[in-house]
Length: 318
Image (cartoon, rainbow, N blue to C red; front, top):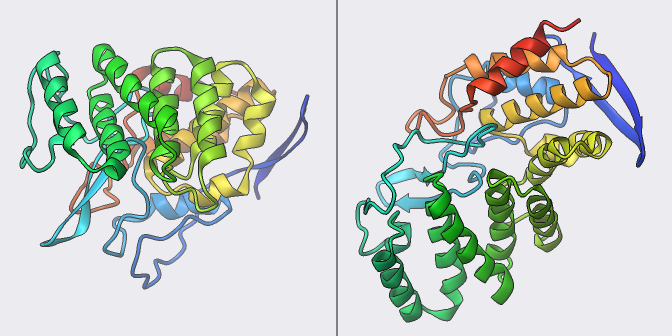
């Protein structure tokens, strides 16, 4: 039996959010690519929690701020991701370098846009290379450099990243880089505590993306719901969390964790039953089984202590 909670808010009736009581264990089919989550969140959560590995040779989606680079000898993309603070979409566990320290990746001459340096000399070199690049490639290089700097979770690097991403959305109309940059700007402004700007760019991401959501994580509504919850607009957040589109596009364990946390907060603040969602969030956080065996840290949640403490409190709530 599943518990359901119907809520009424200022924007009308909110669709039912299903509360999972226990994970469901569907068999793993002989698929050749990473599967897409089913519409029912309870079934999908159970499916992911019981999988030790994902069958297939490609990644279904690249997390916010990530860039996928295929190597000839490796059929699975090596995904670079950033690790934001609470409710982190994905973190690779990289150590943050000291401010303005030059940390180069392998093959930096070829992948100069992935250079994590952001001191004045490094940025002059970036602009020099950008000016020499093909015009059609420039928005992508700006976006990749900004995403690389956002991985550092450094306020100074974040300011530079915001400037680079603003150039993309203000001066280009690329179908992939513009919505991607809006989504990155939404996350960057959220980290800075500017929730109004974060909401604006997340909504612009949804408006500028095509029907297939190219250039986005596919779960932009989840990020927007998190921002709305922080702003106290609970009913609007609940409507977004109940969208079938959002539930179908949840894939990484970190995304399921974020969804469970947001659902628990919604239920707690609207007088519903937060306990099942909080317990589900804690269960996902304790599950460290990799989704990609060759990249074991990709897709795993990296919650902070405050989020875990909050979920533990809600899990014990009557």
